[in-house]
Amino acid sequence: MPPWGHNGVMADVKIRKLPDWVVAAYKVRAEHAGRSLEEELRILLVEGASNSRKELLRKIDAFRNRLRRKYGILSDSTLGIREDREARG
Image 1 (cartoon, one colour):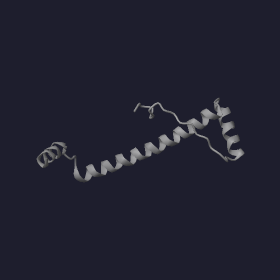
Image 2 (cartoon, rainbow, N blue to C red):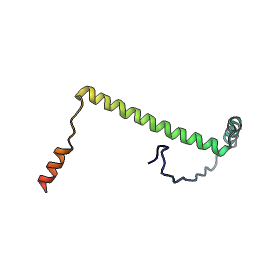
Image 3 (cartoon, rainbow, N blue to C red):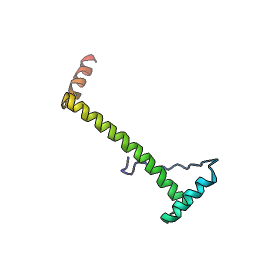
Image 4 (cartoon, rainbow, N blue to C red):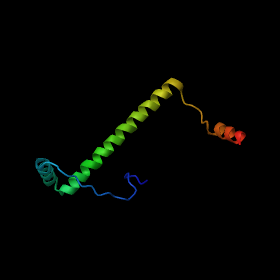
């Protein structure tokens, strides 16, 4: 996957029954930023998804650090697992 977080395939999304005042607010926001409404909403959605992903990665790192403090750095068990599998056939 490329560093920008997608595989090159883009989806189209249509949101129905959105209150007019919401659309108007984002139109104003887009105008102030010198962007189209579409671009403003795209940025909003991408940032929201990125923030969720960053938060998840932060939690994973914190968990990993707690495990390291408790157990130290564990050895790589790959070789032992392979040997066990080969022994079982």
